[in-house]
Length: 149
Image (tube, rainbow, N blue to C red; front, side, top):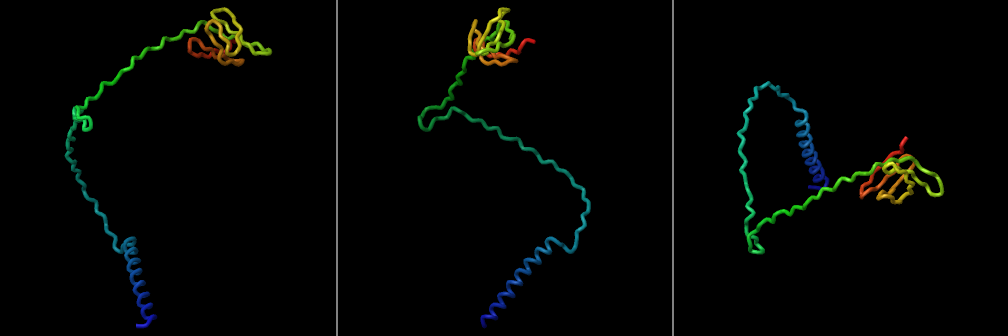
């Protein structure tokens, strides 16, 4: 057999194999006879439900490293001490004074005081302020007061 004859024979075999593969795909996606679907009555058969087996873990096993019985330590409970509610005195924000340092007029229990930012009087500290509101701190709690109109 010559070299050309072998090439033609292999070419014919490759065409035959690829033709068979193409024919299979064609038959799969384009069937020649369509099957008619007939409506069938479907009967529902519920399956029996199996009960799950309950497993429990016994925590009284021997520790393989210490050789003692394992006992789960009792959880430590922290005592929760409720914070006492801070009651602010009667406070109103009356306005601000423009100058070299901006000052704010705040009435505490009916007595007007002039505050500057980070200044403390009668246990009340002015934390932050602007023309419309001030934030005061009293016994660790902060509260916002709006300008009295």
